[in-house]
Image 1: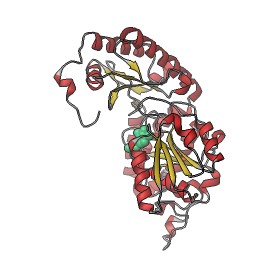
Image 2: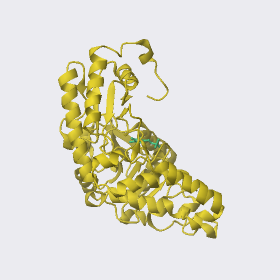
Image 3: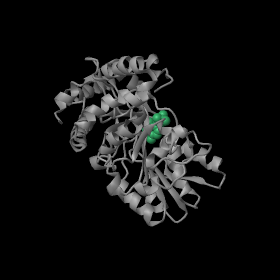
Image 4: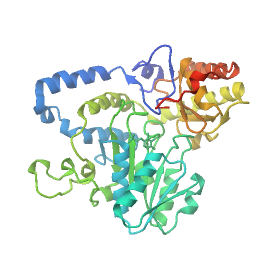
Length: 397
Ligand SMILES: *Cc1c(COP(=O)(O)O)cnc(C)c1O
């Protein structure tokens, strides 16, 4: 099924809203409330603690990991779900650093703050002289040298949508003897990713963005078969132990990627994620990406035609170098986004001046793009954004 009129009906989105922020929080699949109710009423209420076995709650992290892995061309048994993305970045980076005696963690200025904070925090914790080196996104290739232990990059830049060439940079990293950790936060469910072909060492991502798992949905971690079997996890938890219910005095890692499990999984969040993955099981990610490119081109052309004097494209113009969101600069970006939201078009703002529009073809089509162009154009032409109340910064932008 990649009939986008049909997939649109699988989501519950208010009629008067054009939702272009699924890159931050995907909308609610219509099937999720029933799935959650089943977990509550039939599993938790009826089965109580037995549900860990009878409903295989204990197997959820691996089972859901495999379903996410299908979207990323990861081999079965090499993706595990749980915790938050920041924690998964920590685990993956620690595992990659363990495999190298070098000191440099190389990343770019486009990387997400949490990823960089985690890297700096880990360097301090390890106390082995690691250093985070940040360069411009197009300077990564030149900065890859024999001092680099790990290349830590977010595949699709959260602000501009610029997409790195994962296969080429991974190959280059391996040529200089570095490992790589790819953050797929804005890639999973947005663009085709082939972890196996790119020979990626570790990858992480979240499930509340394009995968529509809901607020607080768990993250995922992929470890290449050659890596998973040998690393000692930095956060060795009992559910990542080879025999959790043997309650042994010391840690022994579980087989493969399951050693990256830590503690008790968030069963309700996993149930919500399960419902959203039912949709992804039926969808061809290549078709989703093609459609996203078509819609993004339409949005860019429409906004440049109508608002070209005020908006400057912040995303790469070449669709093959972009993820699935499109960004523009505007000096009053925050107020513009707030005014658009009040007029029914939800995008978001990223400091300092970025308006960001996520394009998710599962529930965004031509009518939504056309309405978004009209509303943004009206907000700019009539200076609707120029109002004190749109300048009041909320906690979450
Ligand atoms: C969204 C995002 C995060 C968020 O991490 P959480 O721990 O889930 O809050 C981290 N890194 C990147 C690149 C992101 O886009």
